[in-house]
Length: 447
Image (cartoon, rainbow, N blue to C red; front, side):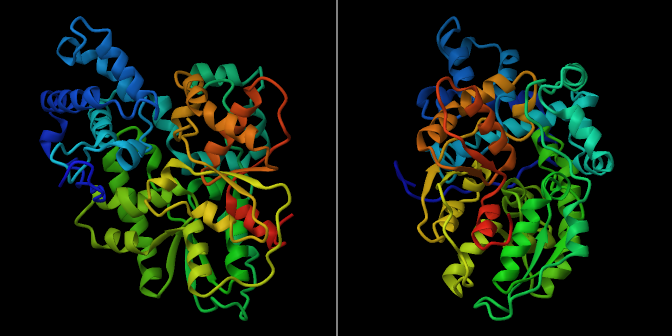
């Protein structure tokens, strides 16, 4: 290993079953070791609010060094981390295999795992992570649920903020009365047997968001793949556990990993590729799960078989070629690359996919939206999240494209709110939940 090395970062398995992982004295020792390295480097100052909080904490201390910072003051630094992995993947020069062995996001995860073990999560926080249950219940009363959760509802949103901690002005995902799995069963698209990629088979891991909140993502994916000769099946055993990971409940994530890997394993054995429809979920299947249950062979197999949907379409284009019928999109696209897509280390596949369209006009936005899963909607974080995402909103306005797309639907909503808050005249911009929807539109498969 040399200074300025171009070696790829590597990650160690998360030792969450080792008693030392939960030893608070040993955690504090590691926090101080890592924070002192960060203090001396400061390369990550503009990524998220964790690092400005850390540097201000040290600079304002008696000595201006970490030795006079009380460990009790570390919590705001930890709380600001969204586990986006951008410091690890794109900024930090000291990640493994460097001898400093610095993994900031997984250290923040360890802190939260100790909080979880000590019972420091509120009931509201825990219930918000139950996305499958919440999706099923709210889907049954979608109209009422969407009315109650709509931003600007002066009757319900202040109550929601007081009870759950969700900021009253934060845009929240809508619920759908008919899940993606239900739609896929009743009206599957016909497979184009003349397509160059005919013969491919893929099982779509629906994800909780596409299943309960925006089935359009799944419908567009199935339609695009069918046009390109890909036979698809839709399987959704349960959520990937990203909401639980954010709160440090690693044991629950491990259980979900084993359950989903067990359900998808038979499809992999039959020759099906696995496609995750949302990048956070793809990241979990590909990278996080194998670090949490490193000895589980089914999880390893699933990790190797999983592709992000944009990644998969680009692979079809490069390997067999796309089916005819794509048309140009008028007005161009501002394509926000979601952090959890970038953390998959696969390249800017969403932008690459959209550039396959005729006369493609794609402007890439490669900065954090400031949303961070459920983090950005919470009362204590919403305004900070908008501040972090303000450069993205400004860039979207400057680009003046007709469409704004993000691989992360939640990030797209958050950016749209940031755009609305900017001063001055702004162009009309249509926010799209996922670029695969635009790709389906270019095929004439959606409105």
